[in-house]
View 1 (cartoon, rainbow over the protein chains, first blue to last red):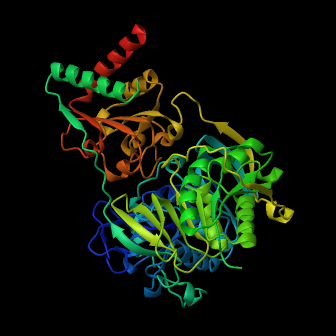
View 2 (tube, rainbow over the protein chains, first blue to last red; view 1 turned 120 degrees about the vertical axis):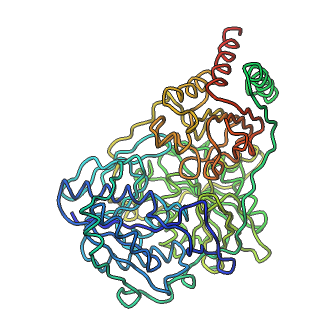
View 3 (spheres, rainbow over the protein chains, first blue to last red; view 1 turned 90 degrees about the vertical axis):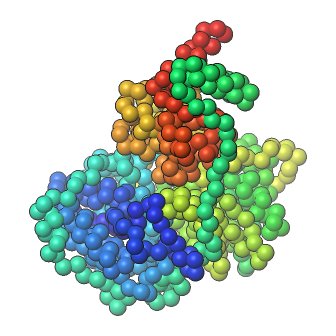
Length: 265
Length: 333
């Protein structure tokens, strides 16, 4: 099986700054990690490779230092990595990002499967995976919680939806976005780390892939961030402090009065 | 032909429309009124309930556009994406809103690429600006920021909104409108993906998306054993069980019960939450809950800022008192 895994380098959330002019994220000075949900896609690729053989290519679009994210997933077990990095890619929305990734994947020749995390923890859109599949005109599905069977020309998978689990058969090649129910990602191995350190990671820009310049970066993106604000959530309810059993008895009593007043009980 | 009208993408199961279809109409109605255009509800399915289609009009639609085919009986990526794309190409809506469900979040991003336009996921607010553009507001970066997004040139402007982030309009049986069935080329209904089986969730712990009462616990419960008190209260109050990301990561409750940005958004009538500090990610998932009671050890915990009623103390001491009181009431009645 030839598997392509898309990953994204994201900031550790909690300490994020925005550029007030472009409305995009400032990535300098913030610690970067591999999007935690992408690790499930990487792990599933490794499991499939271990069972059925083949190769895993990890691909990411980001700033030059995003090669660290690729090295991390290579140390887990991916065979190689490709970094899509160029000033002209910067500020891309999900439409433009999925376009560039799809054009790069086209250059990799035939493949059986593309695996993606369900969404990235920074953008939180979950749109790039479906976008890539659509640009490539391959079938796809989302919220995949298990790969049940690998057949000659298809996969049998389990998909989590609001009311239960679907069992689907999907033709190759396909793209799946996976959720964390699917597996437990492994830690990088020592041997993997050594390999990842030495491995050459090619950097591709618009010259290396067949892209139309008008589709790139902020200029090529249909959506525009026009304003950034801080969310406010505050209700100022009553707070009962409990230091002993009597306080608890009292607070719970008041709570039940509250529940009755709101017709909850 | 220029782009006109507001569309909502309805969802159905076994021919019956889901609640989200009606919720979307409230959002869509407000936008259509501001643009002074028609609100059209799109429905894909098979053997659709006629009374349900009429209800879309009672709940705000001016027109219902239906594609009925055996291949659309349940959601599958290929035919759904193809049909929605074709409808957009045929009728050119100015705005299309979908629900941010597993279906909406799958169809919409593929359709956006096919019709060459932008899409904003998980919007919490939608409005029309002075120039007539759709203003889309959504939380991003783990709920740390609210971003306001526009699609200045491309049409339709597409957005998804969180399910259950608003109630439907009140029913108005005096409303009139037309229900139109559209024929679709069979070629577009072909699928490279097929459904073999469907396993419905066990009802035991309840579906949190539709629950009126949710009892949730987090890391502060410390052990799986103590998390069971959460489950017990949920049973006693006929509610569903929810968990923070930590509770799910620790395996105390399964992922479908995770509340927050990376799990489900809920809007129950009553939300009781114990041992959850209230990270922005969690708070983003409960903003529309009507009544929130929080129990936490730390008086500085964020969760108290969004609670209508807070109890600061050890949940190991507090939860058993609540359980006893609920039992007493049950026996008393």
